Image 1: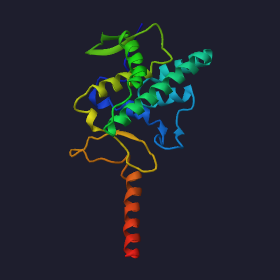
Image 2 (image 1 turned 90 degrees about the vertical axis):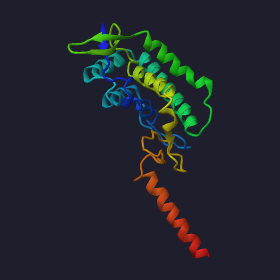
Image 3 (image 1 turned 135 degrees about the vertical axis):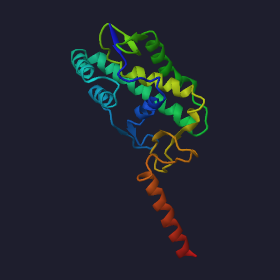
Length: 211
């Protein structure tokens, strides 16, 4: 059975999905992270919203998880392990540090599994990547994430553009800086960026009052 990619991790414009996945734990660099994906169904819902699985695949995965709760729980833990490895690796690179070799293990394990299933399919008008599987797999949303992470890590041009929000509260949001002068510092200029701007303003006012 062949399943065409509903999301193509080989496309440069879609490579950021691995960073989006890492960002599903908010305030990642703080002492009080907030989990956006507490359960396997939440993982499936997120994957569907981001185009990693189709609506039909999401429904099938939900039914499979209900029938095989232990396997779904194990898959969910693998997803969390993969996410945290992706975060640690790209956070380290964003700060000019060398990631731990062990953090590549979850990515390499997923990539090895994926490449054994990946093939090029002939469609009505073109060619397209797809998976060769007997049925939808509980972990199939992790395949394009792992491939995107591997592609980003080995992309000489894009990897230096990975940044982490400079908010001092520990936002930890990862992003790909596509600005021409590579000057992006914040997850959102209207959120953490605006807070930093206000903080600098109040510090200037305080210093003037003390002078």
